[in-house]
Image (tube, rainbow, N blue to C red):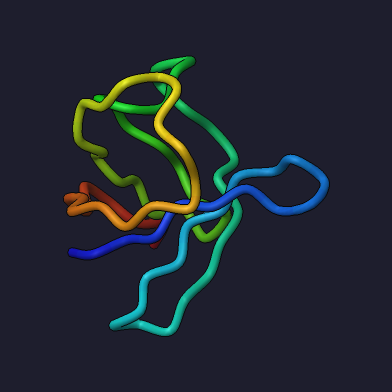
Length: 71
């Protein structure tokens, strides 16, 4: 699924899923650099992000894979 990753004016990361009109904060990252690992959103979804350079400029739209969500 297409996901836009951005940083707000306070420096917090969030993910926006246009197809679901859903924007949630990124609350946990398996990889400190974020890219190439799982991130957990505020609603419990886990997304597998593609591997990219740690200094990739934001905002950026990427193809992510949804792993799980809170029940």
